Structures are given as C-alpha cells and as structure tokens.
Length: 452
Image (cartoon, rainbow, N blue to C red; front, top):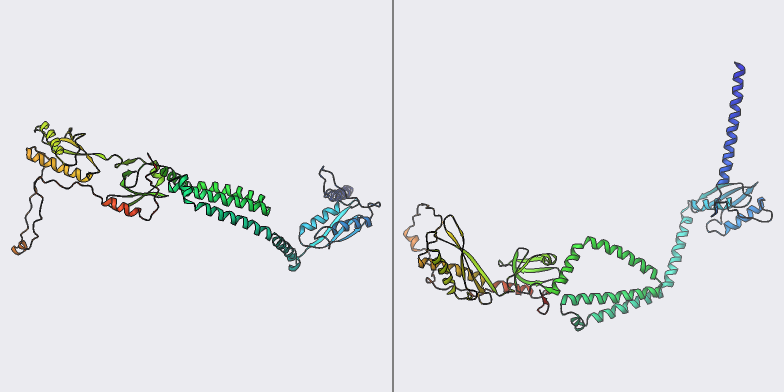
C-alpha cells in the first residue's frame, strides 16, 4: 500500500511538471504569435543592421523608428537578451499598442514588455487639441480670400437673378396667369442662385462638398415629400386649376355639396360665398377631384316644383292651367315652354311636376321659383281646382283681450293686391359680398385663361 502511494505521488509530480512545461511553451508561442502579420499572412520583420539580433542593434533601430512617430518620441527602450522593455508616458493607449507592435517586428526580438503608461495630466492631454485648433484656424485664415471671392460671385448671381425676376413684362409673355408667372420667377431666381453657388464652390475648391450636400438634400427632400404629400398635391391642383379653370369669378357653383358664389381662387384654396353670407374655403386638391356643378355657365336654368290636386278633379285641366299660368309670367322663357306632368298617385292627391325655364341674367332663380308657385296656386284657386291634403281640427280657447289693448294693437300691414306680380329681378347681395372678398387679395382666376 505504501509503495503504490509513493508511485502515485511520483506520477502526479511528473504530470504537474508536464503541465507547467506545456504552459510555458504556450506562453512563448503566444508571444511569438502576437507579432503583426503582413498582407500575405506571414510575419513582417524589420531588419536592423549587419549584426542583426544584437541588443544594441535592436535598441538603435527601434529608437530611430519611434523618434519619427508623433507621440512616441518620449518612449524609452531597453533591450536585454532579445527582451524589449518599453517604458514612458503617452497621450492615449493606442500609441502604446502601436509601439509594442513595432517592437515585435524588429529582427531579433523575442518578447516585448509593454510598460508604457497613459498620460493623466490635463495640460499635456489638451496640448494636441490646442495644436489642432491652431492649425485649423491658420488654414481658415489662409482660406479667407477664396471664401470672400466665392461669396462675391454668389452675391453677383443673386443680384442678377433679382433684376431678371423684376421684369414683369417678360414673365407676362411667358404666361398670362399670375400664379404660373410667379412660378417662372421663382424657378429663374433659383437657377441663378444655384449657378452662382456652383461657381463659388468651384472657386473655393469645395465641389466635392457641394456634391455631398446635394446628395443629402435629395434624401431630405424625398423624406419631406412623403411628409407633406398632401401639401404638394394641393399645390399641383392649384397649378392645374389655374391653367384650366372649371369656373370663373362670380359663378354660382356647387363643389362637393357646398353651394356658393365663387369669390376667388388662391394658391391654397377656392373661396365661396354662400347664400347665407358664409365664407367657405375648400382646398384646391378637393376642388380638383370633386364633382362641380356650375349654375352660371349656362344662363338658362330650369325651375321645378311639385303640386298636388284632387284625384276626383279634371287632371287635364289642372295640367293646362299650370302651364298657362307660367306662360303668362314675366321672366319665364317660351322656348322651351313650361311643362306640367303627372308624377305619381298619392294617398290623398295626384302629384304633378311643374317646370319652366328662366333666364338667370334677367331673373333671380329663387325669386322666380317662388313667384311660379304662387301663380299656379292662385290659378288653381281661380279655376276651382282643389289641392287636397290631410286636415286636422284643433280646438283652442281664444285669449281674451282688453279693449285698451285692442286699441293699441299694431296696425294691419299693407298687402299687395291679389294677382299682382312680385319682384323677380336678380339679387346681387351675394355677388357684392364676393366682390368685397376679391379686393386686395390674390386671385388666380383670369378671364383670359382656358375654361373647361
């Protein structure tokens, strides 16, 4: 038992010695493998002198190399039996790693001990920054004459572009539309500025920078285009509406369900004045895509209304009476003549559809329709044509009124005589409000523009 134990102890000692030897060999291999490799994968070796491999030759060669590298002049080199020891202080750890990498490439170096420390004092670390700033300031001062010349070129082109865009007759010849003419002005001025900027950049030697800026501007413009695509769509719609106008100023139109008189077309919206006097702004993109009903484009407009008559009455007589009543009315056109037709049989009456045409230049449509209904009603009453409708009897007590209260009651208003014609002349109240809206504001509607 004792012999076996001693044998195991000896074996353990032999294994431990083998492990130590393997670890030492691994460290040597790691040190050798830490040397930099060349482009072809082999280690690049820096030759020293004829006595390559000697400590003195390694020292002289390494010190000469470090003396030529900024930041490594203060590194001390000590060589003993091929072991290089680097000491000193550098500004950043990258310089220390560079010095160690160079030392490993010297012929004859076995191991490199890198004991270089990083600088912690404030003044030495700030000195390179101050040197760089000073150098850049000097470069800027030397660049000032070229900068002044480039700015002068840009200013000259800027002034020349401003002079050209002020030639109103030139742009009126290009386009009578003020909006398109203004676009031409902006495009010409931008062209002058870009040309001046490119020439100025060429003078200053910054053409590469201009290319980078233009590329970045393209990406930024693409991003902005996606972000403001609604605004761009509205702008393009304004251009198309100003070129091919679907309506003129003071036209009565219905746009996307909104009726009103067109006051003006701005660069962003179409302004309508409704019959209630309201100011309505509709985006031009909506106007361009909407269904537009123009009541003014054709001066002749048909009015229509429904009337019910007694089912037991003479329907032919009712039709002729309505047509004759409208034919005798001022403002009603004889060609085409008024028309009355049976539309449907209702629960209490036969429904007639009565229509006639009026000239909106001489008659107001709303007033004419009202007068037409009144005349048909009075004609039916005079001819004894009944217009039945559901009736309900409501009984209520009349409030008593003192005699003195009756004496002070308001006088009876003066009413027109039966059968007297009412005024159907055009009403220009809304048109006047639209004209006020147009004063002093930009308006892209032009009489010389093409009409759709």
